[in-house]
Length: 168
Image 1 (cartoon, one colour):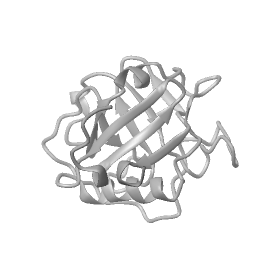
Image 2: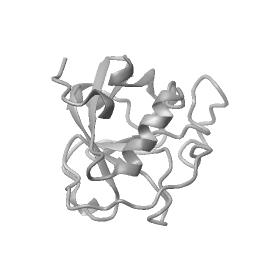
Image 3: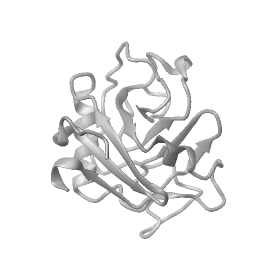
Image 4: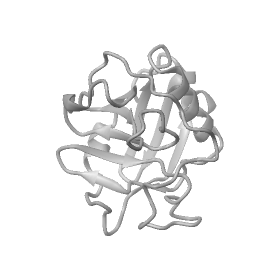
């Protein structure tokens, strides 16, 4: 496993092919990092589908309202919901949307991020300064690359479990 320098700010996502380890960036985006840990600790991300996966772009997930494949799953609604927590203000930075970075998904309103996020398959610098970057994959990117494509995928993959490394 990757060397985990800060277990309190490291997320482990279990996918069908293996674990993806994400280093959160609380010094860059403290509110987004804290929200991901809060939802992970509450089990909200467990069994949530990757509802929008575009080859050569990104894999999006995190709709805890409509995307839970074991509780109330609705593929047509997945991508439109969030959590019961309030939306977050944008935490834009100079960090680029490089391959493996984690970005906060949102509506047209920059201050509408809630629970959804995406992982970039490649450098997507056209997103720089428009979407909050708050983490990066440090291990398991090959498992992200293997996520089933589609908008939505016919048979979506899911996050089996999402944990904060300090709790494992």
